[in-house]
Length: 458
Image 1 (cartoon, rainbow, N blue to C red):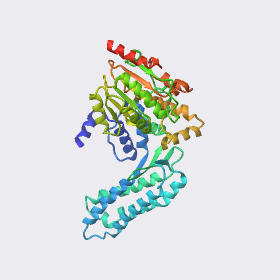
Image 2 (tube, helix red, strand yellow):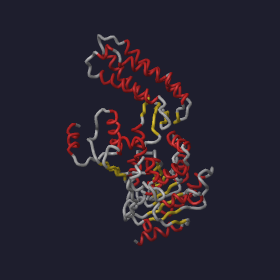
Image 3 (spheres, rainbow, N blue to C red):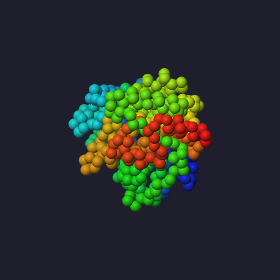
Protein backbone atom coordinates (compact mmCIF):
# COMPACT_ATOMS: atom_id res chain seq x y z
CA UNK A 1 0.00 0.00 0.00
CA UNK A 2 2.88 2.37 0.82
CA UNK A 3 4.48 1.83 -2.60
CA UNK A 4 1.12 2.42 -4.29
CA UNK A 5 0.63 5.71 -2.45
CA UNK A 6 4.15 6.77 -3.36
CA UNK A 7 3.50 6.05 -7.03
CA UNK A 8 0.19 7.93 -6.89
CA UNK A 9 1.89 10.94 -5.31
CA UNK A 10 4.31 11.13 -8.26
CA UNK A 11 1.67 10.50 -10.93
CA UNK A 12 0.29 13.18 -13.26
CA UNK A 13 -3.05 11.36 -13.65
CA UNK A 14 -4.79 9.14 -11.10
CA UNK A 15 -7.85 7.06 -12.05
CA UNK A 16 -10.23 6.07 -9.25
CA UNK A 17 -13.90 5.15 -9.06
CA UNK A 18 -16.51 7.49 -7.61
CA UNK A 19 -16.75 5.55 -4.34
CA UNK A 20 -13.04 5.92 -3.59
CA UNK A 21 -13.12 9.58 -4.59
CA UNK A 22 -15.88 10.47 -2.13
CA UNK A 23 -14.41 8.23 0.56
CA UNK A 24 -11.21 10.28 0.21
CA UNK A 25 -13.23 13.49 0.41
CA UNK A 26 -14.80 12.34 3.67
CA UNK A 27 -11.44 11.30 5.15
CA UNK A 28 -9.96 14.70 4.32
CA UNK A 29 -12.97 16.43 5.88
CA UNK A 30 -12.42 14.55 9.13
CA UNK A 31 -8.76 15.56 9.19
CA UNK A 32 -7.56 11.93 9.32
CA UNK A 33 -5.21 12.15 6.34
CA UNK A 34 -5.97 11.29 2.74
CA UNK A 35 -6.42 8.35 0.38
CA UNK A 36 -5.82 10.22 -2.88
CA UNK A 37 -2.98 12.78 -3.16
CA UNK A 38 -3.99 16.41 -3.63
CA UNK A 39 -5.16 17.32 -7.13
CA UNK A 40 -6.08 20.42 -9.15
CA UNK A 41 -8.47 18.94 -11.74
CA UNK A 42 -11.19 16.31 -11.29
CA UNK A 43 -12.88 14.61 -14.27
CA UNK A 44 -16.03 12.59 -13.55
CA UNK A 45 -17.27 10.15 -16.17
CA UNK A 46 -20.75 8.64 -15.74
CA UNK A 47 -21.51 11.76 -13.70
CA UNK A 48 -25.24 10.92 -13.48
CA UNK A 49 -24.38 8.57 -10.59
CA UNK A 50 -22.62 11.19 -8.47
CA UNK A 51 -25.57 12.43 -6.41
CA UNK A 52 -26.49 8.97 -5.12
CA UNK A 53 -22.88 8.02 -4.29
CA UNK A 54 -22.01 11.38 -2.71
CA UNK A 55 -25.18 11.24 -0.60
CA UNK A 56 -24.09 7.94 0.95
CA UNK A 57 -20.58 9.26 1.77
CA UNK A 58 -21.66 12.68 3.04
CA UNK A 59 -24.11 10.97 5.36
CA UNK A 60 -23.63 8.41 8.13
CA UNK A 61 -24.86 4.84 8.64
CA UNK A 62 -24.62 2.31 11.46
CA UNK A 63 -25.92 -1.26 11.46
CA UNK A 64 -26.59 -3.60 14.34
CA UNK A 65 -24.34 -6.03 12.44
CA UNK A 66 -21.37 -3.71 13.11
CA UNK A 67 -22.23 -3.80 16.80
CA UNK A 68 -22.64 -7.58 16.97
CA UNK A 69 -19.36 -8.08 15.10
CA UNK A 70 -17.62 -5.88 17.67
CA UNK A 71 -19.26 -7.80 20.52
CA UNK A 72 -18.11 -11.11 19.03
CA UNK A 73 -14.50 -9.95 18.83
CA UNK A 74 -14.61 -8.46 22.32
CA UNK A 75 -15.90 -11.75 23.75
CA UNK A 76 -13.01 -13.61 22.13
CA UNK A 77 -10.53 -11.29 23.80
CA UNK A 78 -12.31 -11.52 27.16
CA UNK A 79 -11.88 -15.30 27.13
CA UNK A 80 -8.13 -14.92 26.54
CA UNK A 81 -7.53 -12.40 29.34
CA UNK A 82 -5.73 -13.51 32.43
CA UNK A 83 -4.86 -11.53 35.53
CA UNK A 84 -7.17 -8.67 34.55
CA UNK A 85 -10.51 -7.69 36.09
CA UNK A 86 -12.93 -8.43 33.25
CA UNK A 87 -16.08 -7.37 35.06
CA UNK A 88 -16.42 -3.88 33.54
CA UNK A 89 -15.81 -5.15 30.03
CA UNK A 90 -18.32 -7.99 30.45
CA UNK A 91 -20.94 -5.53 31.74
CA UNK A 92 -20.24 -3.31 28.73
CA UNK A 93 -20.68 -6.15 26.25
CA UNK A 94 -23.91 -7.29 27.93
CA UNK A 95 -25.25 -3.73 27.95
CA UNK A 96 -24.51 -3.31 24.23
CA UNK A 97 -26.23 -6.62 23.49
CA UNK A 98 -29.31 -5.64 25.49
CA UNK A 99 -29.40 -2.26 23.73
CA UNK A 100 -29.33 -3.92 20.32
CA UNK A 101 -32.32 -6.06 21.18
CA UNK A 102 -34.19 -3.03 22.57
CA UNK A 103 -33.38 -1.08 19.40
CA UNK A 104 -34.70 -3.85 17.14
CA UNK A 105 -37.79 -4.19 19.31
CA UNK A 106 -38.48 -0.45 19.11
CA UNK A 107 -38.89 -0.72 15.33
CA UNK A 108 -40.54 -4.14 15.31
CA UNK A 109 -43.57 -4.16 13.03
CA UNK A 110 -42.42 -1.09 11.13
CA UNK A 111 -42.13 -1.16 7.34
CA UNK A 112 -38.93 -2.42 5.72
CA UNK A 113 -37.69 1.16 5.25
CA UNK A 114 -38.94 4.42 6.64
CA UNK A 115 -38.30 7.89 7.95
CA UNK A 116 -37.69 8.48 11.64
CA UNK A 117 -39.76 11.39 12.95
CA UNK A 118 -38.70 13.60 15.84
CA UNK A 119 -40.68 11.65 18.45
CA UNK A 120 -39.26 8.28 17.36
CA UNK A 121 -35.74 9.73 17.24
CA UNK A 122 -36.15 11.10 20.74
CA UNK A 123 -37.40 7.73 22.03
CA UNK A 124 -34.47 5.92 20.41
CA UNK A 125 -32.01 8.48 21.73
CA UNK A 126 -33.29 8.28 25.30
CA UNK A 127 -33.75 4.50 25.20
CA UNK A 128 -31.76 1.93 23.17
CA UNK A 129 -29.19 4.37 21.75
CA UNK A 130 -28.33 5.61 25.24
CA UNK A 131 -28.10 2.01 26.46
CA UNK A 132 -25.75 1.01 23.62
CA UNK A 133 -23.66 4.14 24.19
CA UNK A 134 -23.37 3.35 27.90
CA UNK A 135 -22.15 -0.15 27.06
CA UNK A 136 -19.60 1.14 24.55
CA UNK A 137 -18.23 3.64 27.09
CA UNK A 138 -17.87 0.89 29.69
CA UNK A 139 -15.63 -0.88 27.19
CA UNK A 140 -13.41 1.86 25.78
CA UNK A 141 -13.06 3.79 29.06
CA UNK A 142 -12.04 0.68 31.01
CA UNK A 143 -8.74 1.72 32.64
CA UNK A 144 -7.72 -1.92 33.06
CA UNK A 145 -7.87 -2.38 29.28
CA UNK A 146 -6.37 0.96 28.22
CA UNK A 147 -3.25 0.17 30.30
CA UNK A 148 -2.78 -3.15 28.49
CA UNK A 149 -0.22 -3.13 25.70
CA UNK A 150 -2.33 -5.60 23.75
CA UNK A 151 -2.17 -5.21 19.97
CA UNK A 152 -5.48 -7.06 19.58
CA UNK A 153 -7.56 -5.22 22.17
CA UNK A 154 -6.56 -1.62 21.37
CA UNK A 155 -8.12 -1.56 17.85
CA UNK A 156 -11.35 -2.89 19.37
CA UNK A 157 -11.41 -0.09 21.95
CA UNK A 158 -10.83 2.44 19.16
CA UNK A 159 -13.72 0.92 17.20
CA UNK A 160 -15.99 1.09 20.24
CA UNK A 161 -15.14 4.80 20.66
CA UNK A 162 -15.76 5.52 16.95
CA UNK A 163 -19.10 3.66 16.94
CA UNK A 164 -20.22 5.54 20.04
CA UNK A 165 -19.50 8.89 18.35
CA UNK A 166 -21.14 7.69 15.12
CA UNK A 167 -24.31 6.58 16.93
CA UNK A 168 -24.64 9.98 18.60
CA UNK A 169 -24.25 11.68 15.21
CA UNK A 170 -26.82 9.47 13.48
CA UNK A 171 -29.48 9.63 16.17
CA UNK A 172 -29.60 13.42 16.44
CA UNK A 173 -31.83 15.62 14.32
CA UNK A 174 -29.60 17.78 12.12
CA UNK A 175 -31.91 20.25 10.37
CA UNK A 176 -34.21 20.43 7.38
CA UNK A 177 -31.56 19.30 4.87
CA UNK A 178 -31.04 16.00 6.67
CA UNK A 179 -33.10 12.83 6.85
CA UNK A 180 -32.99 10.29 9.65
CA UNK A 181 -34.21 6.93 8.39
CA UNK A 182 -33.86 3.17 8.91
CA UNK A 183 -33.73 -0.13 7.03
CA UNK A 184 -34.94 -3.39 8.55
CA UNK A 185 -33.31 -6.52 7.15
CA UNK A 186 -33.62 -10.18 8.10
CA UNK A 187 -30.79 -10.17 10.63
CA UNK A 188 -29.95 -6.52 11.10
CA UNK A 189 -31.23 -2.99 11.45
CA UNK A 190 -29.47 -0.02 9.83
CA UNK A 191 -29.83 3.59 10.96
CA UNK A 192 -29.00 6.37 8.49
CA UNK A 193 -28.55 10.12 8.54
CA UNK A 194 -28.47 11.40 4.94
CA UNK A 195 -28.29 14.83 3.29
CA UNK A 196 -31.21 15.64 1.01
CA UNK A 197 -29.24 18.22 -0.97
CA UNK A 198 -25.52 17.73 -1.59
CA UNK A 199 -24.93 21.01 -3.45
CA UNK A 200 -23.54 22.88 -0.43
CA UNK A 201 -21.12 20.06 0.38
CA UNK A 202 -20.02 19.81 -3.25
CA UNK A 203 -19.22 23.51 -3.27
CA UNK A 204 -17.39 23.47 0.05
CA UNK A 205 -15.46 20.23 -0.42
CA UNK A 206 -14.84 20.13 -4.17
CA UNK A 207 -15.56 23.21 -6.29
CA UNK A 208 -13.84 25.62 -3.89
CA UNK A 209 -10.74 23.42 -3.64
CA UNK A 210 -9.94 22.58 -7.28
CA UNK A 211 -9.13 24.62 -10.36
CA UNK A 212 -11.47 22.64 -12.61
CA UNK A 213 -14.15 19.97 -12.29
CA UNK A 214 -15.48 18.28 -15.43
CA UNK A 215 -18.67 16.21 -15.50
CA UNK A 216 -19.48 14.01 -18.46
CA UNK A 217 -22.06 11.34 -19.26
CA UNK A 218 -24.29 10.32 -22.15
CA UNK A 219 -27.33 10.95 -19.94
CA UNK A 220 -26.75 14.24 -18.10
CA UNK A 221 -29.21 16.38 -20.06
CA UNK A 222 -32.99 16.30 -19.74
CA UNK A 223 -35.25 17.88 -22.36
CA UNK A 224 -32.23 19.51 -23.99
CA UNK A 225 -30.85 21.26 -20.88
CA UNK A 226 -28.57 20.58 -17.92
CA UNK A 227 -30.84 22.43 -15.47
CA UNK A 228 -31.66 19.33 -13.43
CA UNK A 229 -28.13 18.01 -12.93
CA UNK A 230 -26.79 21.51 -12.29
CA UNK A 231 -29.29 22.04 -9.48
CA UNK A 232 -28.74 18.59 -7.96
CA UNK A 233 -24.93 18.94 -7.92
CA UNK A 234 -24.93 22.65 -7.05
CA UNK A 235 -22.86 23.60 -10.09
CA UNK A 236 -21.95 27.32 -10.18
CA UNK A 237 -23.71 29.70 -12.60
CA UNK A 238 -20.44 30.23 -14.48
CA UNK A 239 -20.23 26.53 -15.40
CA UNK A 240 -19.55 25.92 -19.10
CA UNK A 241 -21.83 23.33 -20.70
CA UNK A 242 -22.30 21.59 -24.02
CA UNK A 243 -24.44 18.81 -25.45
CA UNK A 244 -22.40 16.90 -28.03
CA UNK A 245 -23.99 14.98 -30.89
CA UNK A 246 -23.89 11.21 -30.55
CA UNK A 247 -21.61 9.28 -32.89
CA UNK A 248 -24.42 6.74 -33.28
CA UNK A 249 -26.96 7.06 -36.11
CA UNK A 250 -30.11 6.29 -34.15
CA UNK A 251 -32.37 7.00 -37.13
CA UNK A 252 -31.05 3.94 -38.93
CA UNK A 253 -29.75 1.85 -36.03
CA UNK A 254 -33.03 1.56 -34.10
CA UNK A 255 -36.77 2.22 -33.96
CA UNK A 256 -38.95 3.07 -30.97
CA UNK A 257 -42.05 0.87 -30.67
CA UNK A 258 -44.79 2.11 -28.29
CA UNK A 259 -48.08 0.15 -28.40
CA UNK A 260 -51.23 2.22 -28.02
CA UNK A 261 -53.59 -0.49 -26.83
CA UNK A 262 -52.09 -1.24 -23.38
CA UNK A 263 -53.75 -0.14 -20.12
CA UNK A 264 -52.02 2.51 -17.97
CA UNK A 265 -49.59 1.26 -15.31
CA UNK A 266 -52.09 1.79 -12.47
CA UNK A 267 -54.53 -0.63 -14.10
CA UNK A 268 -54.97 -3.94 -12.21
CA UNK A 269 -54.32 -5.98 -15.37
CA UNK A 270 -51.29 -3.95 -16.49
CA UNK A 271 -48.80 -6.73 -15.62
CA UNK A 272 -50.76 -9.38 -17.51
CA UNK A 273 -51.30 -7.24 -20.60
CA UNK A 274 -47.66 -6.17 -20.66
CA UNK A 275 -46.59 -9.82 -20.49
CA UNK A 276 -48.74 -10.62 -23.53
CA UNK A 277 -47.22 -7.69 -25.43
CA UNK A 278 -43.72 -8.82 -24.49
CA UNK A 279 -44.55 -12.25 -25.86
CA UNK A 280 -45.62 -10.74 -29.21
CA UNK A 281 -42.43 -8.71 -29.45
CA UNK A 282 -40.13 -11.60 -28.53
CA UNK A 283 -41.59 -13.81 -31.25
CA UNK A 284 -40.71 -11.13 -33.81
CA UNK A 285 -37.23 -10.47 -32.46
CA UNK A 286 -36.52 -14.21 -32.01
CA UNK A 287 -35.49 -13.58 -28.43
CA UNK A 288 -32.29 -11.50 -28.31
CA UNK A 289 -33.90 -9.17 -25.77
CA UNK A 290 -33.24 -7.49 -22.45
CA UNK A 291 -36.51 -6.76 -20.67
CA UNK A 292 -36.18 -4.14 -17.92
CA UNK A 293 -38.85 -3.87 -15.23
CA UNK A 294 -39.39 -1.16 -12.65
CA UNK A 295 -40.63 -3.68 -10.06
CA UNK A 296 -40.17 -7.33 -9.16
CA UNK A 297 -43.94 -7.75 -9.19
CA UNK A 298 -44.26 -7.03 -12.92
CA UNK A 299 -41.13 -9.08 -13.62
CA UNK A 300 -42.60 -12.10 -11.84
CA UNK A 301 -46.00 -11.76 -13.56
CA UNK A 302 -44.39 -11.50 -17.00
CA UNK A 303 -41.94 -14.33 -16.35
CA UNK A 304 -44.69 -16.77 -15.35
CA UNK A 305 -46.69 -15.98 -18.49
CA UNK A 306 -43.81 -15.93 -20.98
CA UNK A 307 -41.39 -18.63 -19.78
CA UNK A 308 -43.20 -21.68 -21.27
CA UNK A 309 -44.50 -19.99 -24.42
CA UNK A 310 -41.29 -19.21 -26.28
CA UNK A 311 -38.72 -21.59 -27.81
CA UNK A 312 -35.67 -19.91 -26.26
CA UNK A 313 -34.14 -19.55 -22.81
CA UNK A 314 -35.50 -16.94 -20.41
CA UNK A 315 -32.96 -15.83 -17.81
CA UNK A 316 -34.36 -14.10 -14.74
CA UNK A 317 -32.67 -11.80 -12.25
CA UNK A 318 -32.28 -13.61 -8.95
CA UNK A 319 -31.74 -17.06 -10.46
CA UNK A 320 -27.96 -16.52 -10.55
CA UNK A 321 -25.40 -13.79 -9.82
CA UNK A 322 -25.49 -10.77 -12.13
CA UNK A 323 -22.21 -11.59 -13.88
CA UNK A 324 -23.27 -15.20 -14.50
CA UNK A 325 -26.60 -14.13 -16.00
CA UNK A 326 -24.97 -11.55 -18.27
CA UNK A 327 -22.36 -14.02 -19.51
CA UNK A 328 -25.02 -16.64 -20.26
CA UNK A 329 -27.13 -14.00 -22.03
CA UNK A 330 -24.15 -12.96 -24.20
CA UNK A 331 -23.32 -16.54 -25.13
CA UNK A 332 -26.87 -17.69 -25.91
CA UNK A 333 -27.71 -15.30 -28.76
CA UNK A 334 -31.48 -15.97 -28.89
CA UNK A 335 -32.02 -15.89 -25.14
CA UNK A 336 -33.95 -13.27 -23.13
CA UNK A 337 -32.99 -11.65 -19.82
CA UNK A 338 -35.66 -10.33 -17.43
CA UNK A 339 -34.18 -7.85 -14.94
CA UNK A 340 -34.78 -4.82 -12.71
CA UNK A 341 -32.77 -2.11 -10.90
CA UNK A 342 -29.06 -2.86 -11.22
CA UNK A 343 -29.36 -3.87 -14.90
CA UNK A 344 -30.55 -0.42 -15.99
CA UNK A 345 -26.93 0.73 -16.24
CA UNK A 346 -23.47 -0.76 -16.58
CA UNK A 347 -24.63 -3.63 -18.82
CA UNK A 348 -22.45 -4.05 -21.91
CA UNK A 349 -23.78 -6.60 -24.41
CA UNK A 350 -22.85 -5.41 -27.91
CA UNK A 351 -23.90 -7.33 -30.99
CA UNK A 352 -26.83 -9.51 -31.96
CA UNK A 353 -27.48 -11.00 -28.48
CA UNK A 354 -29.08 -7.70 -27.45
CA UNK A 355 -31.19 -6.66 -30.44
CA UNK A 356 -34.24 -5.59 -28.45
CA UNK A 357 -34.70 -3.59 -25.28
CA UNK A 358 -38.16 -3.62 -23.68
CA UNK A 359 -39.03 -1.30 -20.78
CA UNK A 360 -42.27 -1.96 -18.92
CA UNK A 361 -42.83 1.48 -17.34
CA UNK A 362 -41.31 4.94 -17.25
CA UNK A 363 -38.69 4.52 -14.50
CA UNK A 364 -39.92 6.90 -11.84
CA UNK A 365 -38.14 6.42 -8.51
CA UNK A 366 -40.38 4.93 -5.86
CA UNK A 367 -41.80 7.55 -3.45
CA UNK A 368 -41.72 4.71 -0.92
CA UNK A 369 -37.93 5.18 -0.72
CA UNK A 370 -37.32 7.41 2.32
CA UNK A 371 -34.79 9.74 0.65
CA UNK A 372 -36.92 10.12 -2.49
CA UNK A 373 -40.02 10.93 -0.42
CA UNK A 374 -38.09 13.41 1.72
CA UNK A 375 -36.66 15.18 -1.35
CA UNK A 376 -40.15 15.44 -2.82
CA UNK A 377 -41.40 17.01 0.42
CA UNK A 378 -38.39 19.36 0.57
CA UNK A 379 -38.96 20.59 -2.99
CA UNK A 380 -42.65 21.15 -2.29
CA UNK A 381 -41.93 23.02 0.97
CA UNK A 382 -39.65 25.38 -0.97
CA UNK A 383 -42.49 26.23 -3.36
CA UNK A 384 -41.27 24.00 -6.18
CA UNK A 385 -43.03 21.36 -8.25
CA UNK A 386 -41.36 18.09 -7.16
CA UNK A 387 -42.89 16.06 -9.97
CA UNK A 388 -41.66 18.25 -12.82
CA UNK A 389 -38.47 19.49 -11.17
CA UNK A 390 -37.26 16.24 -9.58
CA UNK A 391 -39.20 13.10 -10.43
CA UNK A 392 -39.56 13.60 -14.20
CA UNK A 393 -35.92 14.63 -14.87
CA UNK A 394 -34.65 11.76 -12.70
CA UNK A 395 -36.83 9.28 -14.63
CA UNK A 396 -35.65 10.71 -17.97
CA UNK A 397 -32.02 10.06 -17.02
CA UNK A 398 -32.90 6.49 -15.98
CA UNK A 399 -34.74 5.91 -19.28
CA UNK A 400 -31.74 7.18 -21.25
CA UNK A 401 -29.53 4.86 -19.24
CA UNK A 402 -31.80 1.99 -20.26
CA UNK A 403 -31.52 2.97 -23.93
CA UNK A 404 -27.75 2.96 -23.50
CA UNK A 405 -27.88 -0.82 -23.01
CA UNK A 406 -29.18 -1.29 -26.58
CA UNK A 407 -26.76 0.58 -28.84
CA UNK A 408 -23.16 -0.03 -27.80
CA UNK A 409 -21.41 0.14 -31.19
CA UNK A 410 -22.00 1.71 -34.62
CA UNK A 411 -22.74 -1.75 -35.99
CA UNK A 412 -25.49 -2.47 -33.42
CA UNK A 413 -29.10 -2.55 -34.60
CA UNK A 414 -32.12 -2.96 -32.34
CA UNK A 415 -35.64 -2.21 -31.17
CA UNK A 416 -36.45 -0.02 -28.19
CA UNK A 417 -39.94 -0.68 -26.87
CA UNK A 418 -41.59 1.30 -24.07
CA UNK A 419 -44.84 -0.29 -22.85
CA UNK A 420 -46.07 2.71 -20.87
CA UNK A 421 -48.81 4.63 -22.70
CA UNK A 422 -48.23 7.67 -20.48
CA UNK A 423 -45.32 8.61 -22.71
CA UNK A 424 -47.92 9.32 -25.43
CA UNK A 425 -50.96 10.39 -23.41
CA UNK A 426 -49.68 12.45 -20.46
CA UNK A 427 -48.73 16.12 -20.53
CA UNK A 428 -45.21 15.24 -19.37
CA UNK A 429 -44.70 12.36 -21.81
CA UNK A 430 -43.30 14.66 -24.49
CA UNK A 431 -40.38 15.57 -22.21
CA UNK A 432 -39.30 11.91 -22.27
CA UNK A 433 -39.63 11.70 -26.07
CA UNK A 434 -37.82 15.00 -26.61
CA UNK A 435 -34.97 13.84 -24.35
CA UNK A 436 -34.36 10.70 -26.40
CA UNK A 437 -32.24 10.71 -29.58
CA UNK A 438 -34.03 11.18 -32.90
CA UNK A 439 -35.42 7.64 -33.17
CA UNK A 440 -38.20 6.72 -35.65
CA UNK A 441 -41.42 6.07 -33.72
CA UNK A 442 -43.85 3.25 -34.50
CA UNK A 443 -47.08 1.93 -33.00
CA UNK A 444 -47.28 -1.02 -35.42
CA UNK A 445 -45.84 -4.41 -34.44
CA UNK A 446 -45.22 -5.30 -38.08
CA UNK A 447 -42.63 -2.50 -38.26
CA UNK A 448 -40.43 -4.69 -36.07
CA UNK A 449 -40.47 -7.37 -38.79
CA UNK A 450 -39.65 -4.77 -41.46
CA UNK A 451 -36.81 -3.34 -39.34
CA UNK A 452 -35.11 -6.72 -39.00
CA UNK A 453 -35.59 -7.44 -42.70
CA UNK A 454 -33.59 -4.28 -43.40
CA UNK A 455 -30.95 -5.38 -40.87
CA UNK A 456 -30.55 -8.65 -42.78
CA UNK A 457 -30.12 -6.72 -46.02
CA UNK A 458 -27.38 -4.62 -44.41
